[in-house]
Image 1 (tube, rainbow, N blue to C red):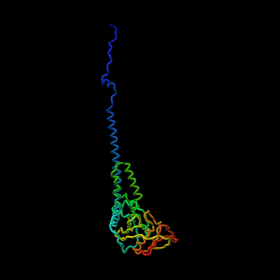
Image 2 (cartoon, helix red, strand yellow):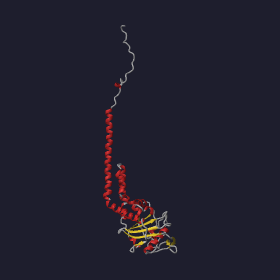
Image 3 (spheres, helix red, strand yellow):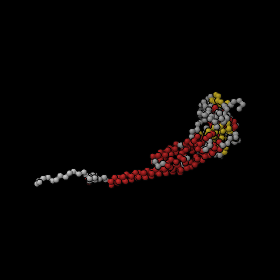
Image 4 (tube, rainbow, N blue to C red):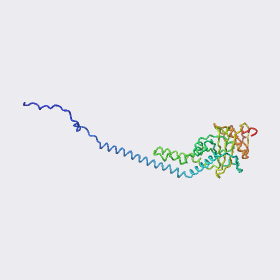
Length: 315
């Protein structure tokens, strides 16, 4: 029929994929480029961090192994020596030997080291070091009229000079951790090294091996060495038998200690002064020990009330 509309075509379902021409294409090229750039930045950052870590590690090792080499060797040599003595002492019974040249009072002219250690720890260098850093004070050396340095100081302040101290620095690649180690090394050098150098000048080493839970119930083995000559000066097994009583004391040969006598949870000043009295008796020195209530008197005043060891009759 003239002027009639075009023939209508029924609607058909759209074929799969025909709409793709109308979708926005994914910019894979830019995504891949961005990913490559991202990982490249990370790689560059890690390389630079590793370079920083390597440089910082090399600096730490340089200071520790080169600049501290001389004092580190001396420190390790002293520790090896006294630890060897301790292990040998634990393997034999003290035989009450005393070098006839020994002058107990004369030890005050030199510098000494002192350590009291439980017998069960005197079996290896690692166990000795483990105990030394937690050793408790006592009054034995003070009752002898001596003021040696505490071996705990030697272990605590000098530990950074041991090769093991570098273990973490060698293993870690974390710049922040290496900076902490570097700061710690600088602090140790500034704060602890001068004291360690002083301790390395020690002339003698006094050791007390404690067998029991306390120094009152079981005997102790006492050893004294000349560090310079590597010679044994005294070996003795001693059982504490004494008590402290108030008294006055004034002696030029055995001056009073400069601080109150130390106590610990495993002993008392009475037992320690009894041990010291027997050491002095062996050495033929004047017995003059001090109790924990001592207060140093001024130069123009006599010593105040003190305490002395009184041995029970028949001992």
